[in-house]
Image 1 (tube, rainbow, N blue to C red):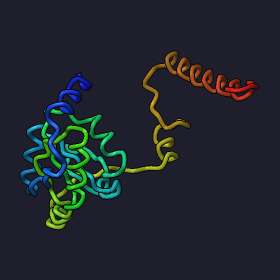
Image 2: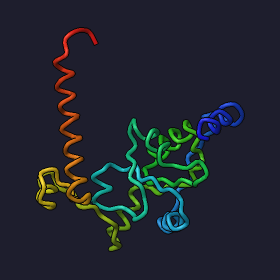
Image 3: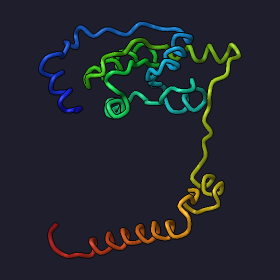
Image 4: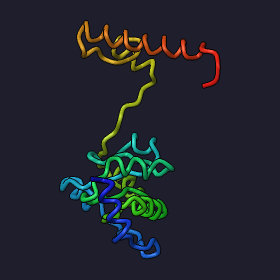
Length: 178
């Protein structure tokens, strides 16, 4: 379906990038209403800023070279998109989204609005971070993952992992051209 849609868009509906405009600035209340209505809100701020405080229901997608790839993976073409970004980032994100036919960007909340919101005493959602060692200690296992598969399923998963390692070791020893 996706390829057929892209073919149609490329053939019939590609608006020139020169016509692309920055989406309108919106308020925090507008953004919260959009989240409540099921819109996709992409928070393009750096990871540390997102971890320190974000609006529940938003998706962290930093504006970097991978932005269009991940946006194309998670965004539905018929779902409105909102951004949390500064003015320059809103322009870049809107352009990147338009390049992959996600051009229903309805607005953006300037990232400094979240900081003003927090300073006014409102709370934002935060994420707990930990090192790999802290994660392992939390679950009492060297790989840090809880055992949800039961005994035999866990042993089979370990056998498969060991088998892959063994194959990789054998392939490195094989002489001759690849």
